[in-house]
Amino acid sequence: MKSMAEKIKILGIVGSLRKSSFNRALLNEAAKLLPPDTVLEITGIEGIPVFNQDDENKLPQAVVEFKRKIKEADAILFATPEYNYSIAGPLKNAIDYASRPYPDNSFAGKAAGIVSASIGMLGGARAQYHLRQTFVFLNMIPVNTPEVFVTFAPQKFDSNMNLKDDATKQYMAQLLKNLVDLARTLKGKKA
Image (tube, rainbow, N blue to C red):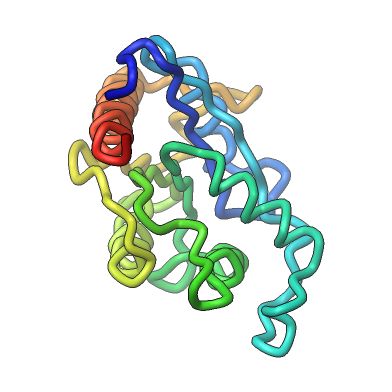
């Protein structure tokens, strides 16, 4: 069994292409709230082309790099906006590419957490539930609680995109702890 002191690597995937994304800001905040012996690498999905099954056996370099980062991580933390009651198209596209070709699903067996921020009063809840549905096929193991929905995001971040809502910070810290605990459990089963 692996040592409990072994570092857990979380890959934070920003589900938005916006430069001033509240979801990117959430991952930046997560980096400040990590449990001991945990590292967080934040990656965007910029540069991943539109999925085309004709290309899945000769993946574009941006996809190869994205898949590598996922495979090297012990856990994935998605930060997703909500568009039209679901996840953003670019995030779904990146997930589709990273799960292909069929026998090379980069997400299989990974612990997964989700956070979301929205300007509205549901905080991205519907997007989170749609993303959870994809975990079934992706064979990811989700952390179910706590759920972290940042509602009315412009009021919860300062002008430098720092989260100023203490309740959200507490929920996020607990989510990260639960994600790391799950990742450690899954690593122990693989040992």
